[in-house]
Amino acid sequence: MNLTNEQIKLLLDKFVVSEEAKTWREQRWEDHKRWKEWIDPNKLEALSDDELKNRFLQYFNEGAGRHPFNAINRDKIINHINFRKVMKFLLDESVPVNERMDKILEKDGTYHIAGIGKGLATSILMDLNSQKYATWNNKTNMGLEALGLSPQFAWGDSWGTRYEKVMEIIRRIRELMPELSFLEVDHFLHIVSATEEGIEAVTSLIEGKEASTDISEKIIQISKERNDMEFVMEKYLEEFIEVNFQKIDFGAKLELYQDEDNHGRQYPTSVGNIDLLAIDSDNEKFVVIELKKGRSSDEVVGQILRYMGWVKENLAMNDYETYDVRGIIISKEKDDKLEYALKMLSNINIFLYSVSFKLNPSLAIPSNKKTR
Image (cartoon, rainbow, N blue to C red):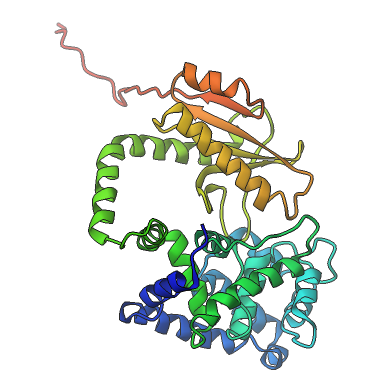
């Protein structure tokens, strides 16, 4: 359901221009001013190669003070022979922004460096001019979807075309409060999609109810009490699988997926966090892995299908056009209902796990038998 302009303005009033939001607004602007000391075509030109790398590393390591970047890509970027040229081209406003996005983000683009994705490139653009450019990352997509304003991408749209479609929608949000910059709009989209208070406020507007912090706290408490034990066990199982991922036989050579924003564990989507998102490069497939976590068969099947649909539409639509999506459900024990449900879904498999616990003495225990 799409929220009306009036409803979105109510949310902006609550989360962006309220007195409570003053602290983070000030912090965002302070960070932005720091980055402007080097994210500028003229200042960039005056920096030595080492100075540019150090400035970029600080920006990258702090996630621009807004969103974390995946550290695995950091060294690839700064050590690339064309690093300076790419940065200079990204900040060149004589070139239309859609052309800059295409040449930097497309795999065969003139200025493409593996590791610079839409989130990092547009974050730098927003710090170049926060009145003109907005950040576009997974959290942006989730925020727009929460408001019912998801951009309609078509198969074959270039990165530049997609960014233009995203910008068109974000500009409409900003027009509701023209005094805002895209820095504030970016944080607003994060709040309504990734915080308890923001999600509850959006839900309340959709359902025609007033948001209630008390109700939210009660729901959270009940959920915690009900799932505490299950959560602890599944949490450590999830950690174990992540740490030992390369040693586990999934029936194919899988690697945990990661992009510039997120790792494959608890990968965020607009329909919830995927327990583990992997990629099977040999067979060109994404693999969504869900732990059953004591849920009903219908619930876990519905959840994994939603995640698979999201991955197909949002990840396989970009650089992975040829990739399909399959699923794995990891359960503690056999479940007839689950097995029957999956008989009609050939692209989802079940794996069972077992836990053993054993104590072994580290020192020899002395015998009570007397000796002469």
